[in-house]
Amino acid sequence: MALPHRLSFLKRASLTRHLMAQKLFKIMEDKKTNLSLALDVTSQNQLLEMADELGSELCVLKTHVDILRDFTSDFGSKLRKIADKHRFLIFEDRKFADIGQTVSLQYKEGIYRIADWADIINAHVIPGPGIIEGLKGSNLLLLAEMSSSGTLAKGAYTKKAVAMGEAHADTVMGFISLQRLSELPGMIHFTPGVKLKSGKDPLGQRYRTVDEILTKNQSDIIIVGRDITHAKHPKTQAALYREKAWSAYVQTIA
Image 1 (spheres, rainbow, N blue to C red):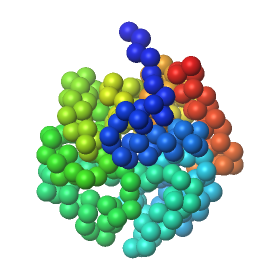
Image 2: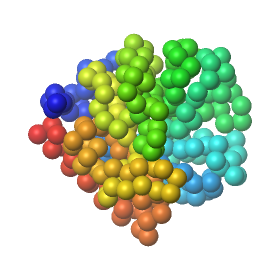
Image 3: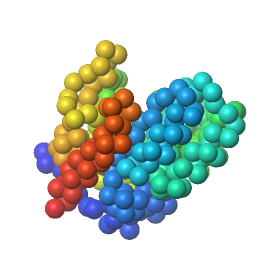
């Protein structure tokens, strides 16, 4: 069944009370980008250098802070300056998955102090709504679907994740999903596993095309990693993805 007509990002910004969702919609419209880069490198210096080099093409930079071999306590503030310079949001892909009290401490305390520098975080819904309560005050994405082969995040699980997110729209700003799942205008859909050509990697990651995700499935933001970071010319490749993704979005609201 065809999805209902989609609204522009700017229109959706005016229809949501979630402040971070409003900010992201406006960044996307102003920069004409719905590209998120998964910068999954293990060197802090490399991450910061690539963030600065590619930041102009991005609306969101996705990190895994716990894979950095050389993490230092000033990492967050350094990345924050680059994000402000290029006007993109920082999404720490921590995938919280514990009881509310534990995830609250994981988010705010410890050596990473994610709450001090990340604009967006995400969580599994396996623990139930308590995980959302534990992360109250954050800007949260719920993992409703995943792009890996054999994932259990589908069917009834996905429906429950969406219902849980919509019931907590003050904290939850969207979903990690393969398609548009919610009709609430403030809910932003991020889709990983996107490449210029479909396929899969040796560890079960399945790749879908930009058009499949943004035009057919009407997701909002594509998350691209190695196809940019491992490219011979990452800046050129990032610009190509940005242009293709924005064109696909524009076609769906035309």
